[in-house]
Amino acid sequence: MPNTGIPLATATAHRKNHNDDLVCFSHLRWNFVFQRPQHLMTRFARERRVFFFEEPIFDSSKPTLELTETQGVVIAVPHLPERLDRLAIRLSLRQLLSDLVSSNHVGRAIFWYYTPMALEFSRELPNAGIVFDCMDELSAFAGAPPALLTLEQELLARATIVFTGGQSLFEAKRAKHSHVHVFPSSVDVAHFARARKRHNEPDDQAGIPHPRLGFFGVVDERMDLDLVAGVARQRPDWHQIIIGPCVKIDPMTLPQGPNIHYLGMKQYDDLPRYLSGWDVATLPFARNDSTRFISPTKTPEYLAAGKPVISTSIQDVVRPYGEMNLISVADTPEEFVRAAEEFLTRSYEQTDWLARVDKFLANMSWDKTWRQMSNLINQAVEMKRHSRAGLMQGATAGQRATATGA
Image 1 (tube, rainbow, N blue to C red):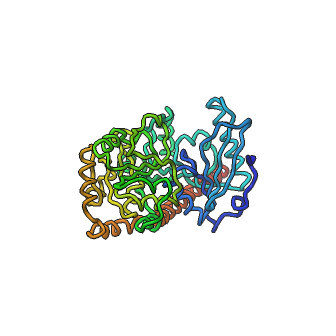
Image 2 (image 1 turned 45 degrees about the horizontal axis):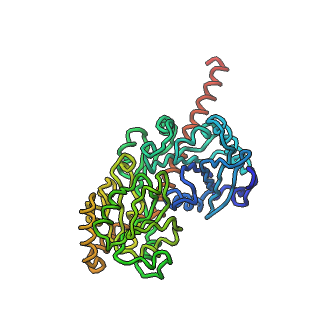
Image 3 (image 1 turned 120 degrees about the vertical axis):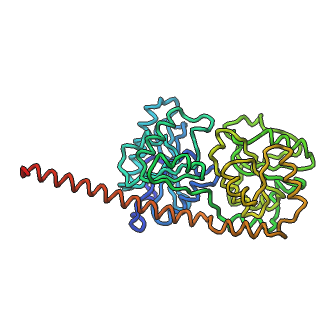
């Protein structure tokens, strides 16, 4: 395991294009599901140095920082000893972060937060500006730390600019900060459009009979397990394929049966091969506190793949996808079965549905989202610099006036 402070060639290079460096604090690991943080940070790395600081792993005899690089992003993973109390964890992370910043000559960087919890060890370091990209209502998730809401209030007070991952979150946060911008889930259309052509089936999916109803994503408290089980019971001749890691829930509680297939976690690059073999793509989300504000990235990804989609009535899926008749909405096993039967008996490639999908997705690229975010950040940081310079000049003028007795 590399020690903290060991520089990487890219990490120690001069700032790219004279842009501020960016340090991202994430509750999601880089090598987990490839989603919003990875899409955005790899694009930001085109124009500036990006450091992705993860939550700690408690497996080391002393605090160390593991540094790796992928797609131009430096991934920093803290490794800490077990059984540290909260204060010791905070102090260790602060030191590791300080060492990373100093050894790589970061100076004042843009601090980008996905988790307010990172304020506990980063608030004292100087920064060029603070971005809060609120992609989920983390306080509603199972196992949320008690301090999360208090730290989110502090982060909103400190933030230079705030982004939200969906319209529902925007409406919940817009009154809490003067510069809140909504950026719903975007999509790499070209990547998922590969699923519109037939591919050689992955080995673990090739033997599964049709019709196939598929899902990819994290399997956790947000999934409606009763719905999955109910559909399996009602149509034993249909096969449900579930791709993704199981977290925060006991795998033994997952519905089982000969027509439910858990294929585990797959690489982002491999998803189109799996999607190409599905007949219907599904979003079987529960309706509870943890899904109240979600805006699933997989909705436009399924559509870019050319697959008909059935979702439960998640607000940011119903609006706009359901309202535009781009997907079907169903909350019970009976409704899910009826919607799937309609999809399975119609050839959607021969209707105007796919043309309407493509028109809608045309303005939803991650490249466009990144460019808009980058412009807003640059403007906000520049305004902050001018404001800071004005305050310093005012203080200097005041000092001169005091010295001369004016």
